[in-house]
Image (cartoon, rainbow, N blue to C red; front, side, top):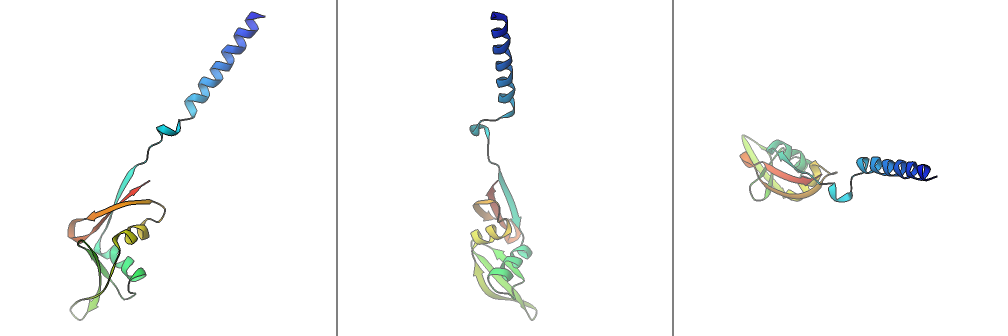
Length: 112
């Protein structure tokens, strides 16, 4: 009888140990921070979709400015939100913040 109980206890502990290996506690899950660079041409896509349909290019220099072609240069057509632009480019990620990138690009930070 005691051998049966010991075998049953051993089997139960082995099963629980196996389950512990395959289920991670909630505290062990961590989120990663991802950075995405939106170039002026990519910002132009956001500007055309959300600010002014004739926009072709956008620059981030503390604020997001949208431009279209005009003769031999560019004409300002409006401004957009850097946070909204980041959300536009990665709608399934959680937006954390943004920063100035090289060549007036927008660097978006997300939690995934």
